[in-house]
Each structure stands twice: as structure tokens, then as C-alpha cells.
Length: 395
Image (cartoon, rainbow, N blue to C red; front, side, top):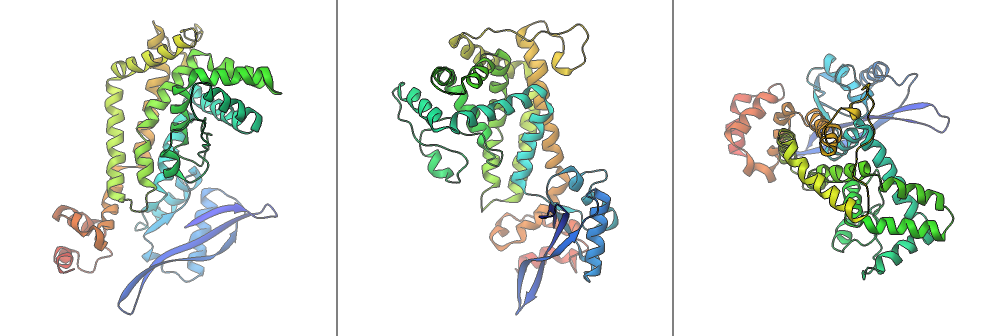
């Protein structure tokens, strides 16, 4: 396991750790040890991979026993063509199991998908600014509480940046959740709240521009929310990200079943593919929802101006307003989610995860087919792979 960061002198340092198992007094233990820091001259994949292998050899490790790698999700480390994990696997074929936080992988599916569609990327950036604009000031936050109380509701302190998720979700959310990059379900929560209280958010921004310093920002944010394209993006994004929320929570559970979570991720990809195949029917309901919110808030239902010379996918020609947003927002976002789910939760890692079922608590999930998959996957590590079914039965 390795990660790179800069020290106080701004010099790149690579920290290297190893995770290994050993036996003592007829019992097996799994341990992680920090090996040391290594100064990096360059931070490209070739330099990092060479540095890791050379240092491990220098420290006396038998690299034929290396079975896995664990890094963050940046392209330098995880690139399929020439990333660090690929380069090391090419030299050490048994080190093919790449470990990356599964919940972080799912978050990267969301981040990368949103970044891939320009209008969605811009909207998420603006939404983050709006939530921080309102919550960063006690005066503006009090205005929000006042507006929500005017509706006969009791304002409850709510902030997704804290880790008291169970307590927070047991209460009705009355205030706008802050959009936090490190709170992986916050995008869905913020979007859900926004669409439920769209008129109130506009009222809050109205009050802010009338009462406080910073009214120019409030005016700008209000004009943004009065744009029908932004409203459609909010509805579409909230709908699609809602599918990912249960899996994100499951992956963060202490008792997460890695195989089952992987199956759920593959099932999600299949669900999105089904939606993609029936895009016209699926988007019809979303467009009606966006239109209902638009009519309630006097937002003009239209599409952006398109030029005769098409250079961007977001300007793809369409005959109707609904068709425009389906072709330029809904379908591209689904396509990117499917792609990133397939990239980060591929089918071919499932046999590796089956080894998880050799833990005593998961023995009940072992079948003949699963035991056979484990024997084939770890054939170089099991002394007598043909006898694995008998060994498991004896356990």
C-alpha cells in the first residue's frame, strides 16, 4: 500500500506500508506495518512503480508472495494502460488484486460522471456554492430558519458534514444540507431537499438580497435557479444518484459483505442500462416533475439557444424542449454512470472476492461453485487446490 504527499519543504514523499498474515501459536493474524517514506524525484507512474518495487526488494521482501496492491483512485496509480498498479502487475502477475475503498470507488463513479457532462458539472459547483453561501453566515442561516418557520415548520439544526448520520436521518430535515465532497451521500440529500423546497430556497435568496450584505451573490444564485435547464439538471441528477445511495451506505457498513456489495454494484449497472434502453419513457416522468416545479415558481420552460454549427454534445439538435434535455443531459449522464460503474466494479474481480467467504462467519454462503472459483483463483497459493472442498468441509 502506498500514497504520496508533500512534506513541509514541499518535497514529494511516498509512504509505503505492507499488509501481511502470519501464524503464531497455531493462530493466524493479519497485520499492517509502516515501512517508511521514500523521496520522489518525479510523481509519474513509472517513477512510483519502480520506486515501490526497488524499495521492497531492498527491504528484503520476496515479491513472488505479493498478491495485492492498495492505492488511491487517481489515474497515476490506477490507470489501466500505464498506471502504477498495471506496471506492477505486468512484472508480478500474482499481484493482480487491486484494493481501493469500495465506497470511495462508488463516490468516484458519481464525481466522474458529473464531471463528464458539462452542464451537470457546472450545476453541482453552483449548488455547492449556494449551500455554503447560506450556511456560512449566521445571519443568512437565521433567514433560512425564519422562512422555513413561516411555513409552520420547526427548524432543526442539520449539517451533513457531521458523522451522526443515524440521528440526523431520524429527524425531518428542515434546513438546507451542506454539500460536502467528503460526505458521499450529501449530493443526493442536498438535491432532494432542494427540489422539495425549491420555492422556499428562492424565498430565502429573496430575503437575503433584501436584508444583508452580499445581496449581489444572492441575486446571481436566484437567477441561476430560475433557469429551467438548471432545474432539469437537478431533477435528473437527483433521480439517478438516488439509485446509488443505498449501495453507498452499505459499502460503509462495518459488516459489509464484499461479494454481495459487488453483486449490488453490478445490479445497479444493469438497472441503469435498462433505464437507458427506455430513456424516453423514464425521462417523461422527470420532465413532468421539472415542469411542475417550474410552473409553481414562474420559471419559463424552454431550451438554451443552439447554434447552426454543432461543436458540443450539449448542443445536439432536438425538435422539442423535452427531447433536447433527454438527448443532451439525461442520456449522457446515464451513459457515463454505466461506464464508470463497469470500470470500477468489473465482473472479473468477483472470483477474488469469493475468498472473503472463507472467513468462519461467512461459511454458510459457500457453495460448490464458489469453492471451485476460489480454488481456480488462488491456485498458486493453495497447497492442494483439488482438495479444497474436503478441506472446507473439515473446517
